Image (tube, rainbow, N blue to C red):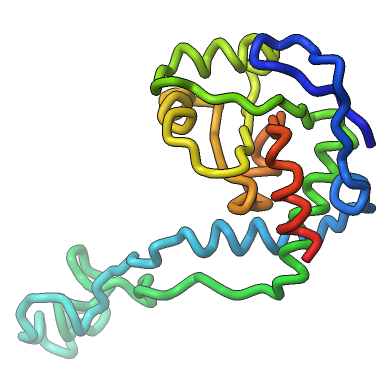
Length: 209
């Protein structure tokens, strides 16, 4: 699949970039995408939630009232969950939500997500660029020139670039990642993916091992 290459002013350079059909043209596997996104979100959970049960509540253990003759139910402790301030029944406890997935499945998920974006014409190829200094206005002008300022965009760079990253950090709908760190959640979450020319070989070497 051949797509036009744009510059930072939003104009076509007249050159074409080839998107590998083994990455951008496969039959997507929805279940692989689901599992990879589920793992990504699960691994981000802290799992530090905790509530006190009746054995952890601080309070008296004195019996509240006599066993019989009150006309009400038996009550043995203020720590009982039926009273205000008592422990919680089967409350949440700290746990680890993370789980592992097969590397081949995760690779298939990323390829499937990229294929969906390619079929929807939501992938743009941008010629390599750099900012002399971090400046949010430069990044804002770039996405405006590419006519994607009102959409969630994912900019894929071949390697870490501090100036570009800092320039995009204050833009709500823009995110910058390196090609080697590309993940399924970011691909699915973005409405448009902007890939620099030098990132394409890195994506191919990462996903076609």
